[in-house]
Amino acid sequence: MTTPVVLAGRGRLGSIIADVINASDEFTIERVLDSSSTPEDILGAELVVDATVLAASEPLVRTAMTRGIPIVVATSGWTSAKLDALTTEFGEPEASVVVVPNFSLGSVVESVLAGIAAPYFDSVEIVEAHHAGKVDSPSGTAVRTAEHIADARRAAGLDGVVAPFADQPARGELIAGVPVHSLRRPGVVAKQDVIFSGPGESLTLTHDTIDPARAYAPGILAALRYAVASTGLTVGLDKVLGVDA
Image (cartoon, rainbow, N blue to C red; front, top):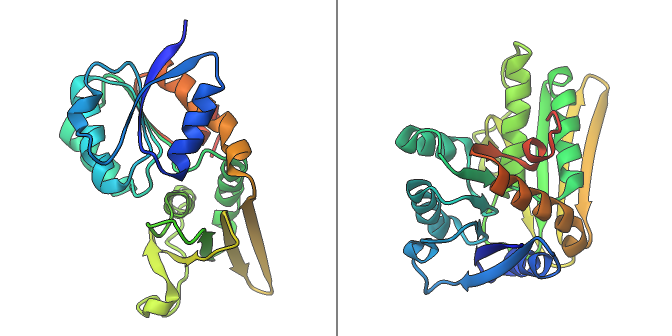
């Protein structure tokens, strides 16, 4: 027996998610919502996957939390502050809310390595590049990575990173104290460099998505399975996979 899914979003990622679901023998698409749909259109759903934009995602997630509907959130822009505001407003959700900034397994590994490196380097910056059609910046992955780096340093009893002249716009947007630089250009799908610097050396972690359909498929299925079998708020594919990031 398959689990019916309501998919919100017909963009690039939504199309990939639809293809993964259609190729699966565990899930089926019940219906697809678009820009003309309302959050109430998810009522009665057994599982929702949100691949919209933040302005549409926020009311969608709130509706799911209010009605106890499991939801996988693949929309960028859900910062720690926004997620904290949700839990303050609603408390711990009864149904599963799984927020996945990036479905790529390689991205999870990069995040784990960034957390390991963070306490050893006082200087770190992130450069992320995506295709010219990606509207939001910084990417959700970059935001999550910056927040993770800050958490790892805090857990080690360290202050924020060193970011000279951070008040200058050209120095990037500060996310959890980490400068993040966003490129939007043709010829690239998704790429992120996390650059650590110390006296006399630097360490660069690079993750490059070449074929998103193949790269995201295992992570998408893992998130769907996790959402129907768990409760509460889960942030990051690392938590879904049980990786210590």
